Image 1 (cartoon, rainbow, N blue to C red):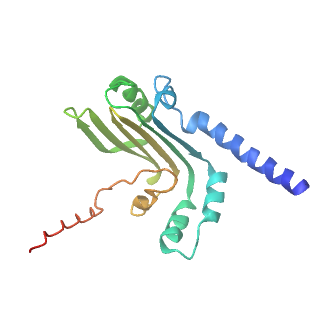
Image 2 (cartoon, one colour; image 1 turned 135 degrees about the vertical axis):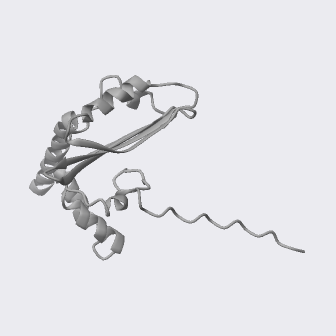
Image 3 (spheres, rainbow, N blue to C red; image 1 turned 90 degrees about the vertical axis):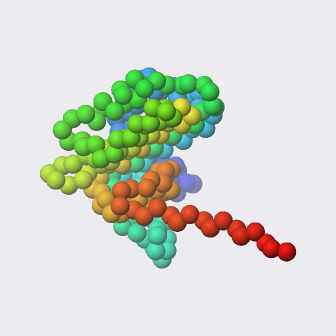
Length: 194
């Protein structure tokens, strides 16, 4: 009974720690906080250092991909993912709302690496990096289009050559980083001749 109680207290502590980090680490502007309530599909993931240690320990060191992710994750302090999908034709947020989020990363420690604006499709993508003493120490991805909004923030020392390996892990969408080869298109099946 004591062992079960101890495990429950530990898990509660980890959850409270993640909630405390959520208040500042994953803070969305007030104009975007309603999105999780109106989304057809919502993903809210917050992993602080303690939660990441648990996730890292659960990975299989014998699998090459998981071993690589484990190695890279050891220097990451936190991961935040907010991803919301909406029904088509229902506008849930404005460009000004997204600009309010971008403005949180306007100081001299943040640098824009990718900035895409597609007015025809009403889409935008921003990838920003945080640096401390010349070392990458964080990344933010903001992707907005009418039917989907995604905010990803990773804090900690980041090896840019390894960053793409986080795609598909912990709710982080797969990103095609600059310099990473795109997957080859699948060959079309040849029609059978009679």
